[in-house]
Image 1: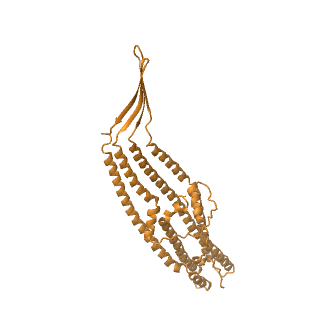
Image 2: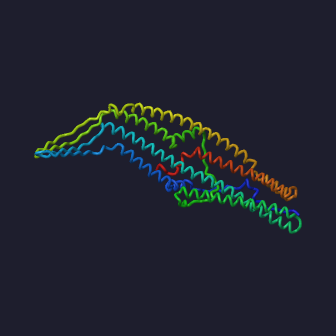
Image 3: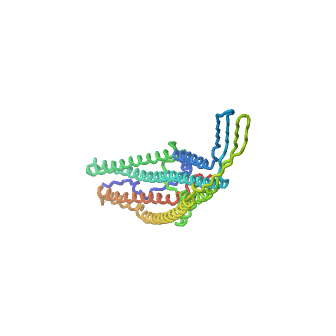
Length: 400
C-alpha cells in the first residue's frame, strides 16, 4: 500500500518571505523617548552641565566687620568687597566649559545609540525566531499528517508499531522545540518593552518575518559614515578640543586677580569712607600647570589618532566579514533552499525506497542545513548592524 503524504513542510527552503511594511523607525523612536536609562542619563548630563557652568561664576561677595571697645568712643570698621579674575580668564574658561558640554552631549548620544542598537538587535532576533517558528510549525504539521497516515497503516496491519512510535518521538521533539522558540519570542518582546520604559510599543507587530534591507557599498563608505555620524568618534575629537581649551585657561591663569570693595571706619561721631583694592599675582600657585595641560593635550591627540586607526582597521575587517558572509549565504542558499531535495525524499518514501527512519534521518540532514542557513542570515544581519548603526540616531529623529 502506498501512502500519498501531503508534505508542505519540506518545501521549507522555499518558505515565502511575505513583505511586511514594519515601521521599525517609529518603534525605535518610541524607545529613544521612553527609555528610563536614557532619561536618567539626560538628567545626569543636565546636572553636569550646570555644574560645569557654575565653575565660571564670580566669587561670593565678602563682608567683614570689626567692632572695637575703647574709651572714650567705641570703634567700628566695615568692609564689603568682591574678588574677580582677569576678564580674559572668564572668556577662556567659558570656551573650555562650552567645549566640555559639547563632549557631554556626544557621550549622551553614544549612550542613546547603544540603546537603539540593543533594540534593533532584538528586532533582528525576533525575525530570526519567527522564521524558526514558521519552519517548526510546518515540520509539526507534516509530522502530524505522517503520524495520522501511519496510524491508519498500523491499524490495517501494514505498518509496524515501532514506525509509529518513532514518528511520535520526532513529533514530541518538534513540539518541544516549538515551545522553546515561543519562550524565546516572549523574552525578545519583553526585552523591547523593557527598553521602552516598561510600556508596550504602539502599533507593534511581534510577528516580524522579514529583515529590513540595509546595504553598504564599500568599506570606505562605512568608514566615512563612522567619521560623520559616530558619537564615539566625535567624543574623541572633542576631547582634543577640550584639552586645547584647557591649555588656554592655564595660560590665562598667570594673569592677576583683583579684589575691590568699600570700607567704612567709624570712631565716635566721625566716619571715614574709602575703597579697598587688592591684587593677587600667581607667582607660585600656577607653576607647571601650563606644561601639565600641554602634556594632557598631546596625550589626547595621540589617543585620538590611535583609536581612529584601530577603529578603521576594525570597520574594514567587519566589512570584509560581511561581504564574505553574504557570498556564503548566496552560495549555500542555491542548493540548501532547493525544494527538489525534499521532493525526491518524498517520492522515495512513497515508493518504499526509504524506510521511515531513513526518511526522517535524511530530512533531518536538510533541516539542519536550513537552520544553519538561518544562523548565517542572522549573523549577517548582526554584523551588518555593526556597520550601519551610526545612522540610527538620525533615522529616529534624534537630531530634530
